[in-house]
Image (cartoon, rainbow, N blue to C red; front, side, top):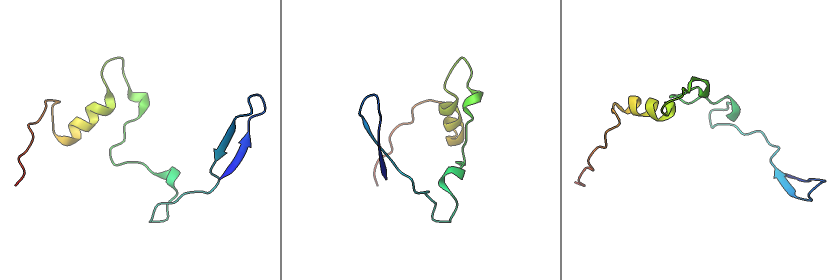
Length: 70
């Protein structure tokens, strides 16, 4: 971490300077999730991220009843 003081406000900002890696050695910034939704695909209606998640789960958006513990 390193600390910078913003000159106009005197606010202190702490920033990390070390690169982070996954356990397999790839840089964190190279990570792409298995279910990726490009924000550019967002249309005027609905939530494309929620829609993609529901499709991946095989649901149509309806609430599923809670399962009883065994």
